[in-house]
Structure formats: structure tokens, C-alpha cells
Image (cartoon, rainbow, N blue to C red; front, side, top):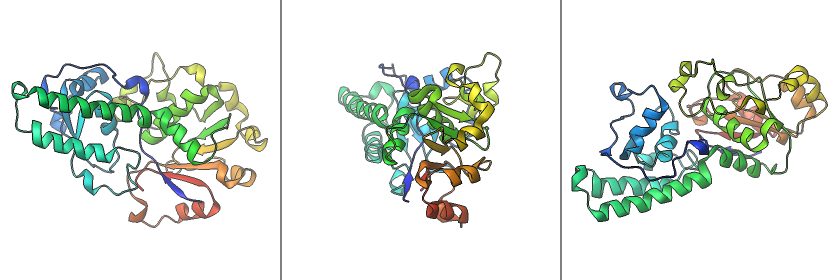
Length: 304
């Protein structure tokens, strides 16, 4: 069974589709410079990008980073450091050619200019590229588009019931964002077990305790999209093959609940594994990965 690339994504409701007045050429937020990490509220963080023509982003622990998508979602263009060195199957779904075009546009027309020095041609070139990036984001990088990509890639576009299992309910960007996509498409017919509390809307939940102050990936879904009754007899449902496919949202994080039962009952291709970790497969010996691959499971890897 082949291994497939996957990327982070962003909820469509987070994407700004309106023109935003710009007050600076380059955002003051610099990846890795903690003194610039001054925002604790999502609206303030987003506004920083909305008011900037460009914002720097780069590889950190892994090439794929939620920051790329947050910049794109806020009518800002990323200046992606060393994007030409990104492996071909990592960030495979991202518009790397447009990122390179963006770097060139910044260097050639914006880098050494103050806001009042920008020409009409500068702005027009910017707007053309910004529209390309916005259209690409809406058509390819939303959470629902990534969920659709997974189903199309595995030839399961006609499924109706999905079990989305986690061994650990702490934040995992790939698991949480992709789950949001599936829940948006399938409502409570995509059952997350156990329930991932921080992606749901609660009046008394401290979302800021989540990694990254909970920005972008928390407080998204109505609780009605989780059928609590299904939690009570999950093993019986698995044994009865109630679900069409089984997804492990982060198979390397927290273990794989019920795997032995599922593996004995479900066709191997109906078991889908996500690996959203920062390290690359070729940076270590992952016997477990090779074993799952040989068993015929569909595996989606972020840093491929």
C-alpha cells in the first residue's frame, strides 16, 4: 500500500475573503524570535497579518507549519525562507511555486521600500499574486478540502460513517484540523473517540491552555456534532463493523486503541493512519511504520 503526503489545513471560516487595509510592508512577527510573539488573542494575531503585505515564515521543527496557513488566510503573502530546499513530497499540497514567486516579488519590489514608496504597479502585482494564493487556499488547503483529498486518494469517497480514533486527546495540529474537516463534511457520522474536547465550543473551557494559545484549531464545532451515545458501546460497534472506515488521527502519539480488534475485522485498506509528527521517516528506523505499510494500511505522512 503506498504512503501519501498530507499537510496541515485551515478551517474555511478562518479565511478572510475581504480586502484588508495595509499599514506595514512586512509583519513584525518573526518565527523563532520570541520577543515578537506578543499576541494572546486570535483576533489580534490575525490582524497583525491582515495589516501586513508580507510575513516571514520558515521551517522550524518541521517544514509544514500552521503559520503558513494563518498568513495565507489573512490576506497576507508569506516570505518563505529556503522554500526551494523543501523535499518534494513534504508540503506536497502547498503551492510551492507561488511561494517562490512571492519571495521574488518581495525581493524585487517591496523589500527595501517604505509603505509610502510603493507604486501602483507594486500594489497591482501584489494583488494578482495574493488572489492566486487565496484561491489556491480555498480550493486546496481548507480542512474540508484535505478531508476530501484523503477520501479521494484512498478511493473511499462514498463512505457514510467514519470512526476517528485518538490515543491522546492533547492538541495535534494534523489530527485536530483534519478531524474538523471530516466533522464539517459528515457531522456526527464522523465519530471522534475519545471526544477531542478543545475543538468543540464550551463556555467554561480554557482554550488558552492549549498549545499556541489555542489559536486557529480550537473552539470550532458545536457539541451536537458529537453523538455521546456512540461512546458507550464503541467496541460493539467495531465488532459489528458499524463504521465504513477507521482513521487513527495520530497513530504515533498515544498509541492505537482497539487496533488488534480492528485489524482482525477490517480490510487493511480501510484502516487509515495519520502521521503529523515533525520528524521525517528517513531520519530514524520506524519498524512500526514499515509493518503497517506491509499490512496494507493507508498511511498519510506530513513530513514525508
